[in-house]
Image (cartoon, helix red, strand yellow):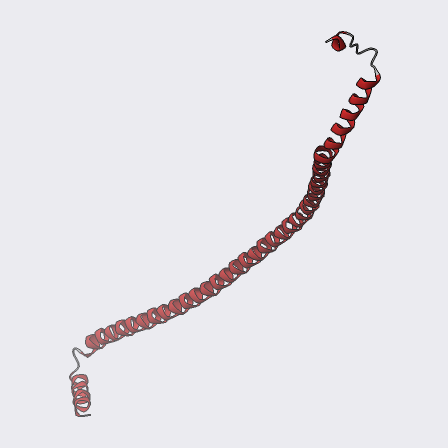
Amino acid sequence: MMFLADFSVIKPDFGLLAWSTLIFLLFWGIMARFAFRPIATALKKREDDIQDSLDEAKKARDEMANLKSENEQLLIQAREERAKILREAKEAKDTIIKEAKDKAKEEAKKIVASAKTEIENQRMAAVIDIKNQIGNIAIEVAEKVLRKELQGDSSQEAFVKSLVEEVKLN
């Protein structure tokens, strides 16, 4: 125990220094073989994984930029198509309205022409009816005038009777 009683860390002797160096070198060798290589391999793998992740992130960013530009192009195309569809719908609406107006005008012309024809027919019927009535009135007036004049004359009565007999014979 005397050896330990004289031990001082501040003034090491040759044996302590040799054993400490030997243990240190042995420990360093074991660490190099079993710890440093796996740690270096793990660090290299981690560095590669980080680099791969960074590359993937850059690739994803590029893809997102491409998708964004494609989306913008699709949006522009959709707006153009919407404008085109609206324009075509407006043209179709205008065409339908114009056709409807033209048909309505044609129908109105037909109705007016039909009404004019009907009015003309009714006017002609009224004129014919008036002529017939005037003719009947004239006949009645003439008949009354002739009766009054023929009432007293026997020669006229004989003449009328002969005319009536001729008419019956024909």
